[in-house]
Length: 87
Figure 1: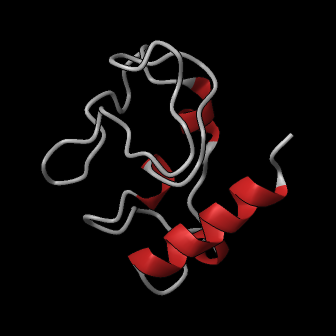
Figure 2 (figure 1 turned 90 degrees about the vertical axis):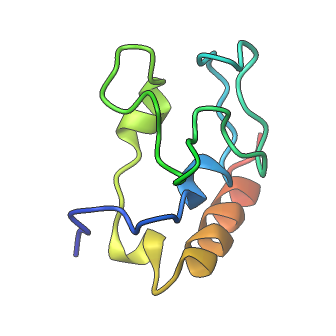
């Protein structure tokens, strides 16, 4: 089951995974576990829908499995995925 909208103030997908491509404000990418500098005060992406948004971010599709029942569950799931897929 897909989630149509992200959970407000979650941002787990903007914190847990590493991003290896450059993004505005983070020219060397983003390490895992570090909040993206493009998160605003309400934990929303400031480059959502813009060409500067990394392909990784656009390809990450929220789902019931990934997002779980809470922001904390999403952070745990995404952190485990990051660890499991680390080169």
